[in-house]
Length: 330
Image (cartoon, rainbow, N blue to C red; front, top):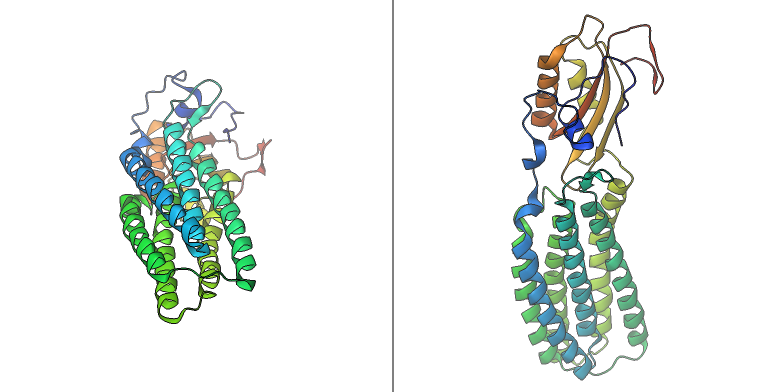
């Protein structure tokens, strides 16, 4: 969302340089914000290892699923396959987000990480639908399955999925895209634990109907995790204020800056899964504030709210009507 430049007193913090390149030639000594909270930069190896491990496991699990007729193993293999695709999509989002800005994509392709998280959630929902259909069909006519084989393969899944999840554990709090990868793999470990339980129960009791029932329980667990990821990805896609940022607190913080008498046209949205952006109009009728004020405002937004990309427009005419938001007001 671009800032509005419509009076002679517009000043910009460094975030505007990212929109328009270096053409402004500002001498502001703001530190560049690209180092703030960018977890994806260090996860290329984690994605490569995770995808390799899970492709191998999907092949093994699907083979045992088909040979034994276990819908629980096939359900788990199908979900693991969707996670391989999900990891690939997340990795692609990270790679695209690191592309430099251009004249057409003035923020670069940072938003790719948001699209990756959204696509990840949708892929999971499709996989869940397929698993649910198969499990319901099997409940009416359960087939005999070897419990020990199911338990053994599921135990392998627990180890592989936990190991993969740990590769993304340190980045899960700062990036929804990385959190999506982490949740998928941690969820898979729980799923494999469920399949292991089903195998042990079938082994001891011979109750083959446990197999599709456990599959439906797996679906419910994964859907619960996916729903939260989907909601946040949709919020980001619609340029909602990122979670963890309080709009009212930012208004209060800007209003507390020396000389500010009114704020309007305040917008906060995610440029990527890790980079929030802000634009605002501030009314300062006491006089032209200069670079020191803008630098202090930029630093405050960065330190208190994690917003490294901010564009601030200064207005000094108390009687002027802003064509964007009407009269200035708090």
